[in-house]
Amino acid sequence: MDKIIIKGGKSLHGTVRLSGAKNAALPAIAASILTGGAHQLQGIPKLKDIQTIKLIMSKLGVSFQEQGTDLAINTDDINEYEASYDLVRTMRASILLLGPLLARLGRAKISMPGGCAIGARPVNLHLKALAMMGVDMHLDHGYINAQTKRLKGADIFFDIPTVTGTENIMMAAVKADGRTVLKNAAREPEIGNLADMLRNMGAQIQGDGSDTIIIEGVNDLYPARQSIIPDRIEAGTFMIASAMTRGDIMIEGCRPDHLSAVIEKLKAVGAKINIFDHGLVIKGPDRLHSVDIKTMPFPGFPTDLQAQFMALMCIADGSSIIKETIFENRFIHVSELKRMGADIAINGNQALVRGQDRLLAAPVMATDLRASASLILAGLVAVDGRTEVSRIYHLDRGYEALEEKFRALGADIRREKV
Image 1 (cartoon, helix red, strand yellow):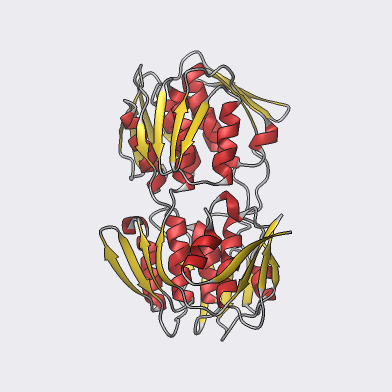
Image 2 (cartoon, helix red, strand yellow):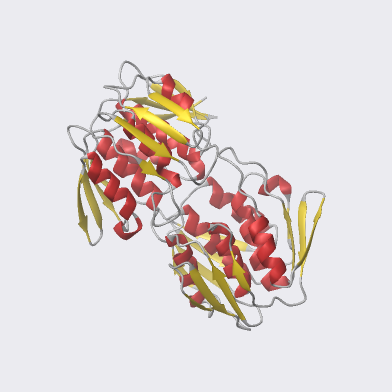
């Protein structure tokens, strides 16, 4: 098991190039199941979650060829419809295979996803929508056993916006009989990236980016070529790092229109941000100001940057209130930040952060993907020794070579095998 070791206090300067977004790559890979042939995806990040979904799909009969960040997928020989618990338990996004398998084979047997450290992510919204589309389902020893003679279009209202739910039903609906209308659909950029790929496959989709998506089912789809959008959460992490370290970083390849809420809050903190066609430059201020945030579905402030922003507020002047509205357990990184001298009080889904002059280096333990990033950011500014972040296998699920990218910007950071 690896750990990250950081000696803080260095200002970060230079240019960083973003990887493709994990949360866009996973549904795109899953969508290739919808039709046979050779698909081409560009900008695939090298992450543990990507390897997991490839392994699951390999057992279904799908073959893959990698060349750099390009991924060739051949789905001609799909001969299985079951995704086993041994693999699904390591990555909840495996549920994204349910919709495409039903559309392609009319059958799917997917293990119910296991628990999640940051809170419940129920799949009932997926299942309710599929039942409305003519799918018969029952739970069998921890598996969702689903089958249909023919998917049919339906008017579906999601009780709450769900990203994977929206993606799953979009993929099922593209081959259903008739029209499917998704209301209160998720609006995240990753939804739009999937919609682009499906359109490239011959699907008829409109309304992505809004809360109402309309899909007209088609009989035939074709292999597609699709580029994956840059990772907006990785971009936000580097933006926060620049603000924390009084740095000056150019972030190449990012989409500022995917980061509007983050840019607004970082400007309020005191950072200077210049936007260009190919990315942005962010300069950290000499003095950080505290601001409040409330996590919301896109285009609001993303829950996946809440932990990192909390690390920033730990060294800002004044007090801030951070309200988490998406996941009920997404403050489990607080106890580790407090080990580094942070002053944070939790009250339900709100955290009161009183900024301190400094954080102190300490051994800490990552509890989930984004908590890992927040502890590394805290380590970049911590003084009096070295910060050691253990259990960083969480980090490798969603960040590609993060420590190498920080080291290229001037950070004193390294990975060490334990």
